[in-house]
Length: 172
Image (cartoon, rainbow, N blue to C red; front, side):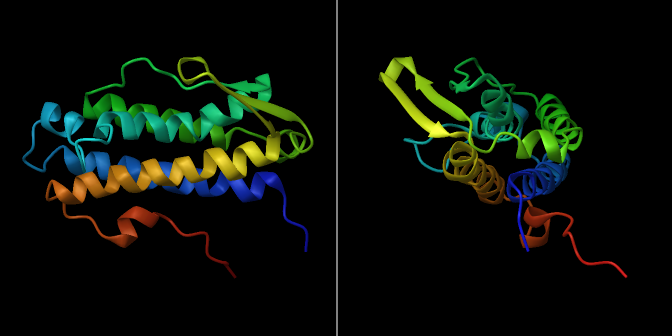
């Protein structure tokens, strides 16, 4: 059985992006202010909740856009701090990924994508599939897990099934 780049990257990002919108929706009634949540951190050396959410978008749909261009650079603009805007950003990323064709994503195999971060003087060459699978995918899951962990730390009643979202089970 062959396994495509599309199958290795896109459906799992969609699954977690969809689930994360539910976490954000639950946040709206958790008793913490939006400002408090947006700035919440697991540790003072880590970036805040709002950045973690933004990074989920950056390392899913943003990664695909980077592969299309052949170059990916971190977006250093300020993240959205309102819960509804965060939810909308996650939803837009999910919808963009849903609109991708398997053929387009699979056509990235063998291409080149550079990770360029001028502030740190980094310019790293990747095969496009390695950029998605060894750089963006681990980053995506790191930021998703950190987002979820901050919400748990803030007392939000979510569990593993909330994190995982809708499973892609075999039907019929």
